[in-house]
Amino acid sequence: MTTEAFPDVQKITYQGIDGDRPLGFRRYDPERMIAGKSMRDHLRFASCYWHTMRNPLADPFGLGTSQTPWDDGTPSVENACRRVGVFFEFLEKIDIDFFCFHDRDIAPEGDDVAESERNLEAVVDTIESEMKSSGRRLLWGTACLFTHQRYASGAGTSPLVDVYCHAAAQTKAALEATHRLGGEGYVFWGGREGYGSLINTDMKRERRNLARLLHMAVDHKHRIGFKGQFYIEPKPKEPTTHQYDADAATCLNFLREFDLLEHFKLNIETNHAWLAGHTMEHELETAMDAGALGSIDANMGVWTNGWDTDNFPTDPILGAQIMRCVLKMGGFTTGGMNFDAKRRRESFQPLDLFHSHVAGMDAMAHGLEIAAKIEADGGIDRFIEARYASWDGDLGRRIAEGGSSLGELRDLAAAAGEPDLPSGRQEMLEGMFNRFL
Ligand code: XLS
Ligand code: NI
Ligand code: NI
Image 1 (cartoon, rainbow, N blue to C red):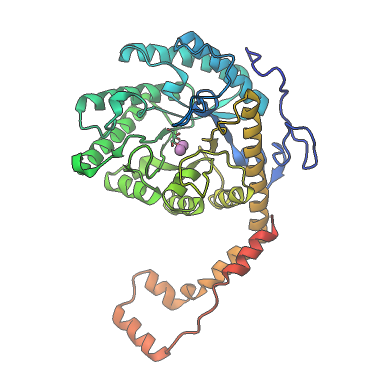
Image 2 (image 1 turned 120 degrees about the vertical axis):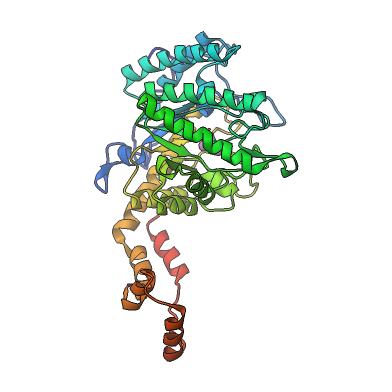
């Protein structure tokens, strides 16, 4: 640790549910074993560089409010490297093992491609040495292909091939930086990959070009020997009117259509699921059923306004719903729980970085506890199994295997008459879930 940016904060530890220290975990007890694994290993928390270090907490009506006394406000590499020290001090004090970054969060864009690459490399040097001394790890890296003006009409889906080349250059450098830092994954979030209106858009060509960029990334991954997992992060809108990676099912179709499915999993974000009109569980299950659930961007929105507000996920029921899915898939492998979340504009003090992460970590840990109890009890799973039991009989199995016909089934229906319908018992099951809160 090279900085002392948070002199009033000690390393945060578990204090128990009744603890009265303002900064201490009440639910997250990192080494506590649950269902055969420590909480730390179940949850694999990550903090993201863009919100934690770079979000000024501005909104469309007001300037940034975030207080960052360590930052001199210049786009110099020196300032960028100083921020890295602050970030690692933060990671150590909050006891988070992983982090995620975009190329442009960590290093300033230069006057040309070569200078941008040099800037990135210089900051990656600093990150590498901080990682070594702190034991922190990189969950995933990504390229920011949406902030610069050149990407106004898209990056991998730009109508202009010259813009596409810049997107490729950034992807190449970000991928190499991620590889160098031993990243467990690499994310593609297509911030500008969509359209404002179809009136000026060749959607077919744009989607094809985007798939080509991803294929070239797969080729480059193999060329440099990067072993991490590739992910696509679905989102339906914001900033574009319609984003091509609208939701999990749409992404899976895109990957299948362009022969990319074997190379990608999904990174599912709660606020994006909600923007798409889905629950988080729906998105997680859709990905899981395709064997493509990889990682999670942990946050939540505000149900009443429908924006991508990236609130910290402080709701333990949401945590329980998420962690039930994670337990069902057998836990994270390369993925983790990345807080893609920002403080409210009113929570502008450096101390709020800690409060917000602690609240999110406690809610997810609480969710893990609840989910583990629900799974150990097994009542909900048993109900679902029993509900579909008729499909395990001879007829059900034969239909599933393709061994029947409309004609045969018609005759069976005619002979058997009206079936006896059992209740779906939704409210009973909701009550069973609530028992474990
Ligand atoms: C934005 C996305 C973004 C990705 C990384 O809404 O969530 O932060 O996670 O590019
Ligand atoms: Ni988001
Ligand atoms: Ni995200």
